[in-house]
Length: 449
Image 1 (cartoon, rainbow, N blue to C red):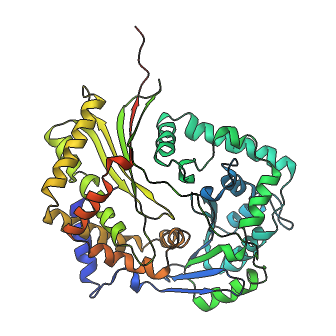
Image 2: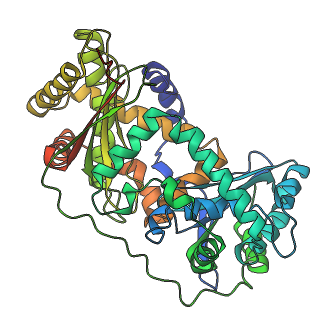
Image 3: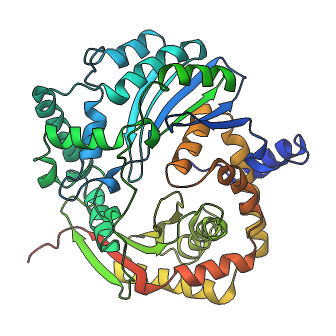
């Protein structure tokens, strides 16, 4: 949910005035070190409340799966709640709850993460259980059958029963002609149905090791205490000497725009989507990603964005517009647009209106006042985000598992503030190349006469 420009401006003015010389995330109390077995540890201190966020991130996600086993990373995430040699199925989560905490896990293209949010004095117990899960998972044939059905039902509910999700899968598959980002994280149903115990164990034994993991602890903790506990629980786990290099199938040069139409009787609101292949944030070279981040806000970041003003208010062509970019990705990501046309406006007309706005922007350039307003909003949002230890831990976890460093995370706010109008326009001219794009129409089934 977006905060209003007025609130963000007022909030930033108040907070920034209280923080002379504010230098972005660099003033966060962050300590990082590496255990002897290769496990990276990041400690983010926040002593305002006696809570701690304990997370283990693995540098492996759905894009690291073997061909033909789509969904195995997410499948394994489910299976690791089934128990270990010392923990009964469900005991880990029950123990967290009994100690007043919360736990869960999630899988993405580039990482899988497990976490517990607990009282800070329960950190020792959390590390003990998570370290046990790292190497001592126990997977029975019954567990495989049960959880395979669970993930198939999850796919049915979240994807197969959602035409917009199915449309998104088709868009991704068209955007990435060779890279694994074109395969859904949850997996293709026909491959999910064949996942077995050997597939899960192979992925587990290959990727779940301390030298492929990052421990992040945020909250009311000290680096010395975290280090002692990490060495106690994770330190004895041997590194995997056969951890494979993180090689990905590379995307070939994209030289032809692609189009698709997805029809589904359940579609109540048609829309136009456009995605362009775009650069990700790279270690030590985040400037292009910063310009793209600002560009997305300028073009479609809210009611004062270019698309909103032109299509929703001036011409009333659309009831919703948006532009989106997230550079936290190991490989090339996408820059996306969505336009939901107003009643009586065809998808063809909505797409033409989108193209007109993009063409006009490339000619007229960036409004200086809007650029400064957006940069102030970004700064305020960064300050506001520091009130949540979970968001802080996630910010570092997503960055480090995609190739960035602690220094990159800390430099990011000021790199964003340094973006100029020329930077934005250079990024726009580079990324908005139709030869690297996919345009999709989501629409209801045509009614036969």
